Amino acid sequence: MALKRDPQLDKEAQAWIESVIGEKFPNCPYEDALRDGTILCKLMNKLQPNSIPKYYTEGGGFRSRENISLFQNAARTYGIPDLQLFQSVDLYEKRNISQVTDCIYALSRQ
Image 1 (cartoon, rainbow, N blue to C red):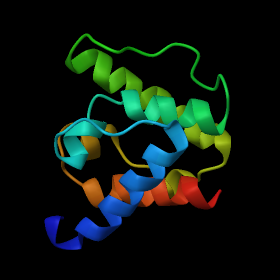
Image 2: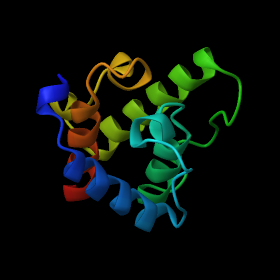
Image 3: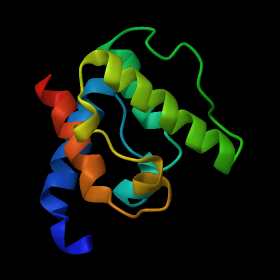
Image 4: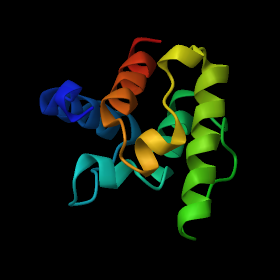
């Protein structure tokens, strides 16, 4: 999976997210910044206000996976097809970060 990953696409996706949410990523790798789902929930709320009325900003693994699920449901409602969404393990366990980036690109095109 790492062979499919393009660091330039990750950087562009990060820059787009930062411009939409109006804040910079924390000083850590792209996938680590996204891992707890908080930034993704903020993104969806900017694109579709109040699409995720409540998400978790702390609480560990279960809460992080819940945030990712909230994002996926909101993205689906926003019009992203299931084929362009990523699985929770793709992000949380860093199995397929390129699929996460592809999903973000799909959001940017929507």
